[in-house]
Image: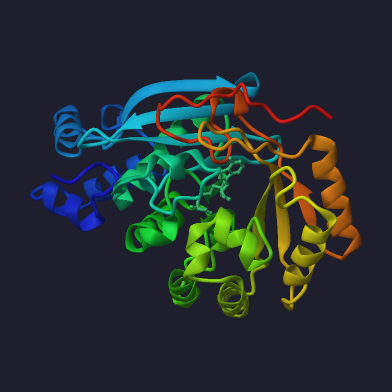
Length: 349
Ligand code: SAH
C-alpha cells in the first residue's frame, strides 16, 4: 500500500476510477496546496473523504512533540513503518519558517561528534516519508499562522546516500508544495559522486557541505568519509556544482574547542572558500553537546572571533543561532529519542 505523500497523481487517478476528473485535482490541491487531512477536504463528498483517508494512510505516526525558544522551535519525533524513529524540526524566524528534514533513520557516515552518526544506520526513508515531514511541520506552522518558506535537508541521515528518494522528494516539494529551488538546501558530508549527479539534475537547489576541517589530517579524523573523498576532490565537485547552478555554496563548520577553531584553521578555511568564482559562505555553529563525544564546543565569544577573522580574510561568515539545544533538537543532536545528555554544555564566555 502506498502512503499519503508517496502516492503519485496517477496513483490517485487510479484510486478514484469512476469519479469525475476534477476530483483528482481536488484531492491533489487538498493534499499539497491546502495541506489538509482527507477528513477536512470539504469539497469532496463524505464517503470519498473516508475512502482517501483509508487508502492513503499517513507514513508518520507522531510519538512526541517538544517545543523550545518560546514555541519558535518545534521538534517532532515520528515512528515509521517497521518501528524506526526519526525527527523533524520546525524553526520559526521573523522573516522565514524553516523545516529541517531527516532522510534516513540513523546514518552510516559515523562522524564522531554527531549524535545521529554515533547511533548508526537503520534504514533509508522513502520520498513520501520525507515529503510528509514537510507537510506535517507545515500544518503545525499553519496552525500558528505561519507558512513554511525553506526546507533544509539537515536532519538525521546523509541525503546523498539516499539520493533517488531525496531527489524525488525535492521535486514533489518544489512542484506541488511550491517551494522554490533556492529555498531548498541539501546538506552533505561530501559524497563526491552524489554532488556531481546533483549538478546535472534540473532543479538548482542550494548545496551545503559539512566541511568542519580544511586539511585532510583533521578532516579524516572528524568526518571519516574524507578518507574516500578528500578535500581537493570535494572542492572540485563543489566547483562543478557552482558552475552548473550559479548558486553560492555554503560550508558548515561546527567549532570544536582546540580542534578546528584556531587562527590557522580560519586561514586554511578562507583559502578554500576563496578558490571559487563566488566565494563560499561559511555557517559557523558552536559544537553542540552529544553523548558520545567528550570534546567541547568553542565558547560563543570565540565563535564570533573566528567569524571576524574569516570576514577580515574576505569570506562571508554567519554565526548560526543555536535552536533547540535544550530539547536536543540542534545540529547533530538528533538521535530519535535516544537520551542525549545536555549537561556537557559549551564553556561560558
Ligand atoms: N549528513 C548531512 C546532513 C546532516 S546536516 C551532512 O552531514 O551535511 C547536520 C549538520 O550538523 C551537519 O553539518 C553536521 O556536520 C552538523 N553537526 C553534527 N553534529 C554536530 C554537533 N554536535 N554540533 C554542531 N553541529 C553538528
